[in-house]
Image (cartoon, rainbow, N blue to C red; front, side):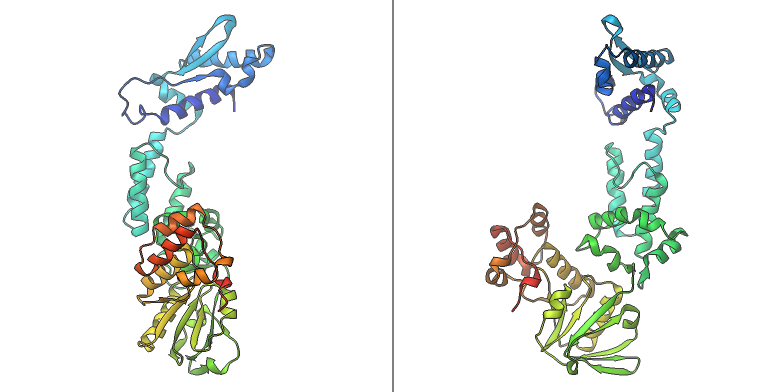
Length: 388
């Protein structure tokens, strides 16, 4: 970047982040920068080539009328001040799109997507206010096209009704197999911040977007009928994994034990040996296919109790709360209480600041005592540490 453009871009940045830009200033503002701040070597006048080159750039900008320079003895420039009467010419010289024009485009997009779904309503409303307050729009990196793709993806994700491969989704929405992957980190961050998801890492899977085929593992006291074929899991020594597409072919599930147990982590599923439950490993997340399967079990076994076994931390509670809300089944927490924490105190870990903030936001009444204990004792527990 040339010296001239470096000076002007810095001054324009100051202007665009000021109250003058939003017409909320009560006094006239001047947008000034010290030359030595932009060019530290300028202070060393023995470097004549650098000193002379910067002075020539400043003189050029003054002749154009873009800046007013404060010159001291020995032709040393102390600072330059932006001429706000020449803003249009400065933008044109820089080849820079004015922030007002960018904001107008952003507002049009935000209004377009504001009513598409609840997440977009929350996000777009917040960003419109941020623009009014002259704050940066979240997940916008000075690329209008990319930003619209992010909004488009958030809208399209809620329309996916069955498991879809990530690249297939990208082709369906953007007609390109790689576009979604390029923006997926922004999409998941937006969804996590403005949606209702227990864990950032499982957001796409919970919305039916997967990179590879996924499976649901079963074992224990249950009889499953698939395409007319009946499997009595109680007679098997171990579990069976069924691919997600095949789950839709399950016609009936009869629970022959005392309840259904969903388990958050694979290691805990493998070591869980209470033979009185029909046990399901959900792969760390639950999407539409899995939720429909759980609802089918509940529908066919209305008097059966449903339990969930997960980590005793903010993520574990969020997953359980989300599972309850999305299935409308009153899942009972299994070994996710104060007593389990006390019994396994030697295996607990300290809470992070983020853990504490997330725990404070959980409002489920039956978690209250456990969460208070966790905050008071600065502890959390992974379910793998619970052995009995």
